[in-house]
Length: 556
Image: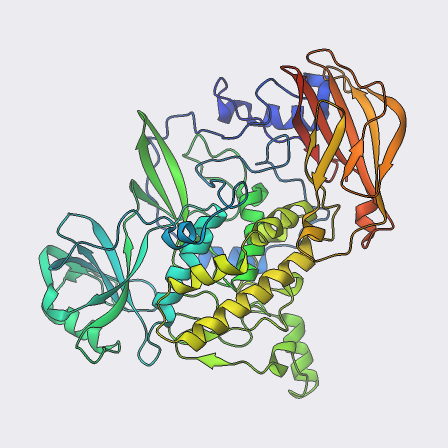
């Protein structure tokens, strides 16, 4: 499918439907490719200064997601990709590890712009009213705002370290996330600021925050021998907080939010990363939109946050062994348990987990990415197609063992054995993700056509050792009329035993010419590899430029 085309010269909200229809209809409504294809970035061009903050209803989302009617297959193609089937940079996502190699140091640094909050004292300006862990909001000596959260008693390092590690990984993947730092907090470094307020749990009303509230919160967490308390400091995000986003629909008052969220590849593909990191708590309450002013314009930026309940941590203790295996409500499973008087064994009940106080409960040997489930159904995840999952798996596999170790080190868990175990598990789960979704579609990636007519491409499934190389590749060549969509074959097709294929004689040479190459494998390890992908090249400035790519044709 051609994507919704977002251009600076159009009014997005008014033309979104027209553009989508034109994309589906193909060249009948205009040229297939434009001179600026493939678009690398989708800027938000409409003024969003009128967007208002909104309260987030967790109960509403849970009810909608858990009991929404089943989807009618097949899912529609994602709408946030460009013409080469990639996700452009936007207020939702910025390409990082997907388009360039990252060093271990870049992964360790992540989104961080400084070492940590300024030296103490810190001024407490609000108490933390939501969530399951105690905490408060502080302002440091530089005037920066941070949200302070602690580990639960008896599980030092688990929630705080997990939060930092997951933040580094999600940032490297391309998502907008906060800066998170592991810090040591001392009671004498904290003082309540004027006007600070707090709504105690279970109390509908806010009241002034007191010095005794700090003491009460610190009594809930475990202190270190030197009298300090380990915490994670999450820097306030730039812009005006607007509340979270949902994984379905759009934000009605944001004129740039024209693609339903369940049709965004960066949210569909998030299923891959959530499964990899066992981020079962993927819902709107763990997101935040902010109204940002930049270069004289106002737009909404969309963030993921609150990762203390990922991997082996449930924030208040180790992850329950069934999480990642079942939704909160599993009707069929409950019936089986009742009928068998509890003798029905669920898969997770036969796993021997190793539980470390620093990292909680997570394993990689029995992990099945395709069967993985968050706590409640996620509308974007449910609509993920094979090409969306391939995109996510390709990014996950870009994390080398070295990069995974670098991310885990940032958690500063204080137990080398636990850190080694977590890194090993994440490597196993990464490889499982690759096997599940990288090799089950034709994995041809980023084809290029040189001056001599030599087509080259990569095969991530084989490159990562997740599948054997096929017996060979075949390319079918054709002239492509960008105005009409007509295809005229060139030659009889060419074959090669490698990922380099020579074009037949007869390739056009005129500036502005287009060719389409259909690439498929034979004697392949998976039947889907025999289904051709389509690569479109345009003659620009005397060379061939990739302007289009279809992994799964729109009609499928």
